[in-house]
Image (cartoon, rainbow, N blue to C red; front, top):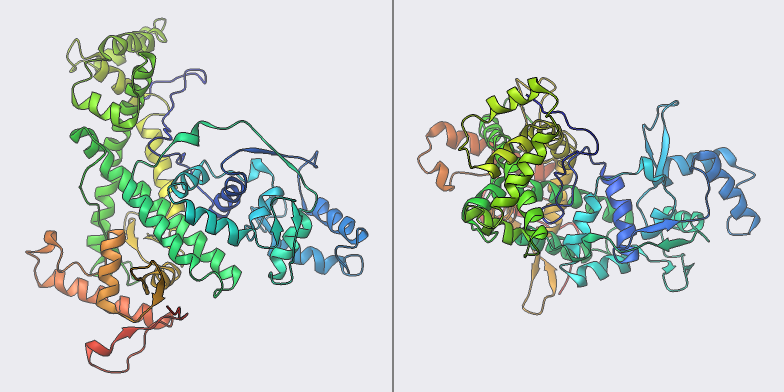
Length: 523
């Protein structure tokens, strides 16, 4: 039974202190554009001026002609079709691209930090994913500053003018021309200013990956760098959400956010939905999906306790809420009773609904008002059933499902081939570029060859993704079928590395079978 609520009574599930992300289908290009805005303004929202109507191809072409009149570009009037094709293909991010009727401009392509200055916000929503990434980035100021310095090349943020753009790629130079003279006005600070990420280890790994990516900033073409950055954003948002779904109920049981419980997931590298290892990968994803309802309930509990503690003028961090829940909610008992009564008051004129609610709550203790209130939240519109649908969609988009950058795969017929962990070739390429770097005692990175077994072990230790599970404790008593499945997976892993150019068989000796860095970084 779903308990209907009006818009004014709508419950709030999203808690920035747990995760700022609102679980919906999240386009990663939109995340980058909005993240660039936050990096540029140091986390401040802005109001972008100069335009009174929405951007479309006509307004962008009119702007190009205006730039030609100003002497900033040449050849627009002589080659309007070529210029429009260049704008459409290289500079503009669209929703419903290719659909003549529904196609709309979302923003400029996230190739430069200033690309956020031309966007239609209604078509460029990222459901607060950029807020979550920026919150994580703030934990490593040197990484944040390094990214800002790289992404704003060719632009002077102090004077809001272009500098030397001759070293930039043509697309970034085009973006800087298009945003010329567009001003933005900072808005009041948001509540996210003092938010810190709940999962510290995941945040540290994310920032270390970006630190490693920045090592390549003068080696990689800008388009390749941005593509790697985009993949890492989706990859780490997905890992963060998966870890959160797994760990938050365990934090609730322990009464603290400092837990050692380790999340892991078997990934199928074979690109074959009927592979031997697929059953293990499907099982891990099924376990994660089955943890969703516990995660939803824990989130509702933390949200409710935080709200009640705030009303009592007490500490109301997530840690405070976890401790209160572990102790049986002694400080918020009276408020829970009033919250429960207030919720029921919405249906005092609906006898049928009241009867259904009482049947639903008949097995709760008479004085367990907090448990009753949380159960009502779970079963209300916007509750667990609603969240389940959108969380799965969110994970599908963050994991770039069934693409070359995928962390998740499934078949068209999901019942026969359900969701399972996977490792796309573009994602693998990105991770290899980072893991072949080794840091010395002075914090200097240099590339070095890496064996295939060491790479698989590094991916397992760093990200919790299992390619070869033979040495995993949970497979300690495995039979020959399990061994054969993971051997097939490792063979596919080796073959995928060969396909993307990191590995070639020079010898049968394992000691000589090394992954060679594509871009050599010297000490």
